[in-house]
Image (tube, rainbow, N blue to C red):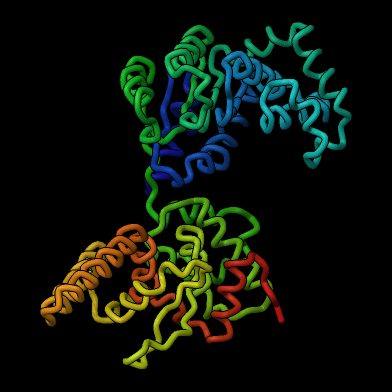
Amino acid sequence: MSKITALTEYLTREDGFLLSDRHNGKTIMLSGFWGVGKTHFWKNIVEPVVSKKLLENESACVYVSLYGKDNLEALKNEILFKAYSFQNKASKTDDITSKAISVFGFTSRIISSSLSIGDLAKIDSSEISDSIKGFFESKKIQKAEEYINNGGVICLDDFERKSRNIDLNDLFGFISQLSIELNCKVVIILNSDSFEGKERNIFKQVKEKTINKFFMYSPTIEELFNVIFTTPKYKNLTAHKTTILEVIKESKELNARIYIQVLDNCLEWISSGFSSSSLRALILSTINFIKNHFIFDKTITCEGTGREVYKICMKSKNYYEIVMFLTEQMPGLSGGVDNVIHQMRGSINNRKETESSSTSNKTVQTKADQHYYELNKKFNDNISTYEAIYFYGYYLKIEEGATQEEFRKIISFVESGVLNKS
């Protein structure tokens, strides 16, 4: 059984943690590294099961992102409104008002902004305003509290991305009060390593008093990929699933957002009739561009050796000298990225010492010192770029499997976002 399957069952089975009354009044933390798909796991795997059960029990399952939230009052109001809406989808206006609140927050700004957002434009802004006003002028707040009380589930996502206007002590105090007084379960989703400075110390102190249960979301590459791949639109890629997964494993990348972009690019590529043999080059080019913001183009012949080397396609010329130097060295390097970078740095220093010792002219030696000082500085300032050059270019051989014409289409597609079918 995979770790994701085990965690899902633990949380959502009939007597699971989120559906058992014996865990009411508890605050739960679902933590994991940035990008591993915690939100996707909650909204696509956990929430649908929990929501269905709570709907039957006349309880509420509420999801709120703390991203950009700048005051607790707005957060409280959003939770209550969504709790009521969960059990009472009486009208399209209420449903769209709930969506507007998710996008803009529980403030008057949703009234003026909502008209430009898709479905929200179909509802007159005055109707949204009346929907909110009516909520506070009726007994709906009391009903909302009843839906949360004794078994409701409140999920607070993007915890570390809250506004600094909300004091962390106050936020934890509100969460503790919410879970205990309304006897519900509060789930906090976050990357706990994101807090810095004073807030980091507060977080360490307060979480011990507030959090009753910790869950770590740490899928393997294959587990995370399989979760993302369940999205219906990727059915058209079923025949290529194994190939795509194996290439992602080669890249060692563990990031849900990157997987989605990779799969979207693969879907567009295959749907446009291009060869599946070039998927590997497309996948690696996509991942590299997302992470490192440059593309590869194998078009330069190295002076003196006649060997083809990689050129970084970027407007800046600051990289040229050191890239040309490193590309001479890279084919002879081996080992992991860290070891190779160490070898590269050693090669720069060795060449400096060789050139300096080959002459007794102090002026030339001084120029050599300055030249290699600048070379070392460029190298150290752009080390992540050179790591990527080696890893994707020379270690993984990014263009392998694609014809020259296909690879040119790939790098154009990845860089511009537009796939030229001709």
